[in-house]
Figure (cartoon, each protein chain N blue to C red):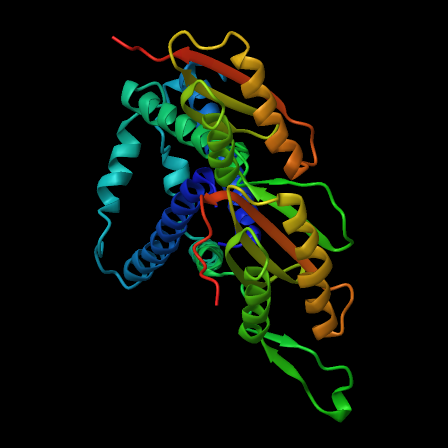
Length: 179
Length: 192
């Protein structure tokens, strides 16, 4: 499960709990009021007074309404954000068999493939839906053709998997500070 | 969490987000005089709204009904977070009059895991039977960094999946395979 899905899950669980207990509490308050009893937990007479004494153009009301807009936008962002995929689809070979490659494992694999290239001191990779990005640190005075070598290693690794979509590769090289 | 729960979460959050955005946006428009300066000066809870339920006994019943509906929907939403799409049994009954045949999913998954672990380059394998739209087997396979991915995939599809389908007597049984290349540098399994 991706990080986006985890955040969505936690927010959804908290919201569901809030809605569940909030609505049950409101029912309890209505029942208590019908029996001529005072507020059970929610000081609703104070809330009613506050709403009667504040106008729409009151700054505190505007701040609260602005807060509603912000929370609404955050919910929409959470709902519509796709995030990085947990796995990438590979080309189909057999009917009824879907094969994917885990994104995190693929990143590790690309890092390892890059690090094995001669002249590379360390490497890290990140994979999105369409692009594989590799950042590598080269040893000082390394071969000028090293970028091509890294790119070839990354492409070979991706080709060996056979991703459904042809992926772009981006290689960024930095030189290791030897001071 | 199930992919169904993911879809539900996205739908509910979109609906709630749109509701809050609309309510907040309209309220702000009202407060800044978009619907007339006099309306912006009105209290948030006018007297006619506050006294509306007086003499209308059905009003609070309707509110209670709506609140209970929200509570039930919220409970279902909460339960959807806890539900997994794993299943522990497979129904293999072909003729109910002759009797029922069920298979423990673990018997199937253990066999699949063992066979997958026998493939050179596979360092770990875990399988589970899931039910999302239709029953299918999810097989996660960790591969050594030196593994020949193409060969592993061929063996998984041509042998492991074929044997699984043969065992179930269902040549179309759906299978999802998740490859995890580079999970371990060297195979952890010892030769026996």
